[in-house]
Length: 463
Image 1 (tube, one colour):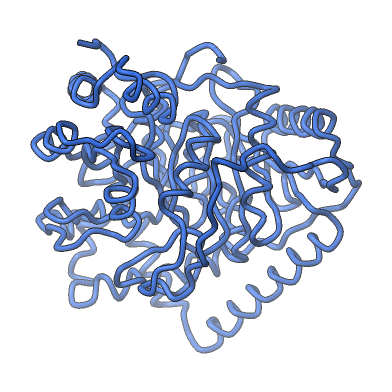
Image 2: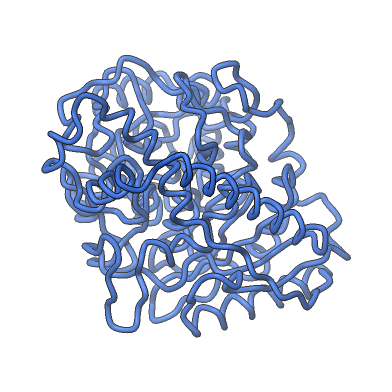
C-alpha cells in the first residue's frame, strides 16, 4: 500500500497503473488520507463512496483510467452540492452533470474525488469565500492560490491529486496556475464545450484543467474537446493532441515580449524573470523577437458588467434580499451594475469590446505570439479580496486581470507556464497566440518544460 499520492503527472500515474506499479484503489486511499490531513482547504466536499466505487471498477486502458481527479465546485455533478460557492445556494444539490465532466467520466475514466474550492460564482481571482473559507497556496500557507480555480490548483500543486478541472472567464485557470507553479491552458473559445444549459453571454468563459505537465493538458484535450450541441459555439473535434505534441516546427515564428501588455502594473522582479524566460525560449526554438510597442486596451469594467448580467439572472428572485449572504465584492459589483448599466453603457461596452478585438487582431497581424506575465506579482495574502494594497504588492482586481482578460474577451488561446520563482513563490509566464493556435502553444510550453523544467509539486525539485 502506498503512503502518499502520486507526485508525478497524471499520464505517468496511468502508466504506473498499467504496469502494475500502483492500483487505482491504492492511489485513491492515499489521496483520501492526504486530503483529510491537509491544511490547504483545497477540497470542500469529498464523495468517498462514489470515488471508491469508481476506483474499484476503473478501466486503466482509458486515457485517465483510475486517476483521482478534483472537480472545481462550479462544475456540476449529479448528486453533489451545487452551491456555486455561495451561502445563497448552500443547500442546493445538482440534478445534472456538466458536459465537460461527463466526457472525463465516460471517455476519460477518471475517479471523481470531490469538489475543490473556488471564489463565489467564480467572480474573483482569489481563493476565499464565505461558505467554505480560504484555500491556501501550497508554496506558502497564508498566501492565495488564486482564483477562481484556486482549490484545483492548490490540490494539484499541493500533492493531493495529479490533475483537476478548472474554468477561465477572465484568467481563472491561468491566474491560479501562475500562483501555484502549474500549467494553465485557456483554449480558443469553444475548444471544450460547456453546458448543458450553456449561458452564452458574454462569451468569455472556457473550461479546462489545472495540470502538472503539458502532456497532461494535451491528453485532457483528447478526452474533453469537440463540438456539443448544447454549446452552440463549441468547436469541431480535433484528434491527436497528445500524439502530435512537440512535432511542430517553431523556428521563425515572430514573438513580441511585452511583460505588462502595456496595461498592467507588474512587479520589476516578475518582469525580469518573464523576459529572461521568453528570451531563452526564443533562443531554444528559434523564435524571431520583434520589437513591438504592445498596448492592449483595458476592459476590466466592461468585462465585469458583462459577467454580472449572468449573475443577476442566477439570483433572480433572491437579490437584493440575499445581499448579506454574498461576498462583499460580489454584492458591491451587483449594486454598481444596477446603478451603472443603461443602453448607453451597454453600447459603450460593445464598442470597447470591438476596439479590443481590433487591437488584438492588429497585434497578431504583426507577430505570431505575444509573451507577457501571467500575474502582476507573486501570490498575495490569501484573505485579500480586492482593491487592497499589501506592502508593495498591487492586488487590485482590475490590475490582476489586465494580463489575462484580453484573451477571454477576444477568445484567443493562452497558456501559463512556470518560470524562475521569486522570493520562494512561483512566477508564471503567459504565451498568447492567434485563434485556433492551441496546439502551437502547447508545443511552445513543452519546449519551456524541457529546457526550464519546473517542480511538479510545491517545494519539489525540478524534474
